[in-house]
Amino acid sequence: MGAPASLLDPGTERDPQPLYRTLRGNFPLVHDEPFGAWLISRYADVRAALADPRLVAPSPGPVPAHGAYRDLVSPALRERMSATLRAAVERAAHVLASRLAARREADLVAEFCQWLPVAAAVTALGLPYEDTARVHAWCRTGLDHLGGHRPGLDAYLRPHLLRRRDRPGDDLLSVLCTARPGGHPLPDETVTELAGTVLGAAGETTARSLASFLANLLDHPGQLGLVRDRPELAGAAWAESLRRDPPLQIVPRRALERIGPVPAGATVACLLGAAGRDPARFADPDRYDVFRADPGDLAHGPGPHHCPGAPLARLTAEAGLRALLTALPGLRRAPGPRPRAEGLVSRSPRTLPVCPG
Image (cartoon, rainbow, N blue to C red; front, side, top):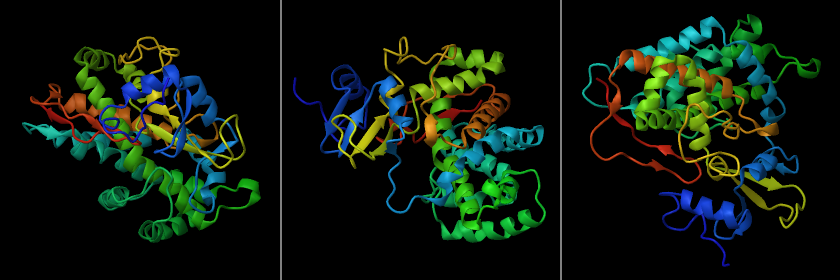
């Protein structure tokens, strides 16, 4: 049997699932020379790789300072999923959805999905809501889920850090400013990097996840109706969308030592888009099913590299869906061709034309 096609071959980006099926069935571990990585595609292998301490996130330079402290973020967000934060996110979702109510047609990606996660992250951090557009611009120009150094964002956050250190509140930025791991406060640089991680996840990963979530429900009107009648199903619908259409299809890791045929220093590409549809793990894996009992947890990264913004992402998705169904009771796909999901590493619909009424 010859080697499979490369991830970089024409047609793979348009629809990677045929290649994913070939890889899972016949090449569970294979070196993709054009792509420059070893590919793993089965659910059990991908899950194990993401939790393996011998495989680390690749870094073009020194390990970011926030790496050792990212575990502060998720617990703090979960603890602060208070009525106040929920109400603020729901209010932002309602404002965005209401703006679409009188329209004959709208693009949910550009007018809803790209804005709501940023507004939710701004609220969680305790930043002024009127600064959402400013933060949104940073998120749209390269800030991602790894945060990173953005001079404009750093300069913007510094005065807020000074105020939180002097008079902390109950927001996430205050939690980071008052945290004392090992008995010492976090440096300002680390706090701004962690805040950038939350904002970056909102600007890219959550926006993509939300677009795929809404597309899946709109493509399955019967299931959308179920969630409309039974709002408690929204969380399951969100988890199922992350399984079927994760925003990050490919997560790279670097081997610290030789692991089987994989040499030290090599890149391992964990194919989340393939693992989430592994028939050995999921029955009828291509089907979107809000009643799926166990959709797994790969999209937010099990193990040491889990996404710290996962609780806020779920809150954002549930609030966004409720707001849309309330303000736009007749929400449906717009007539005409349906735009396909795009992207090889990150994948989601780039547009989502709908009829609000």
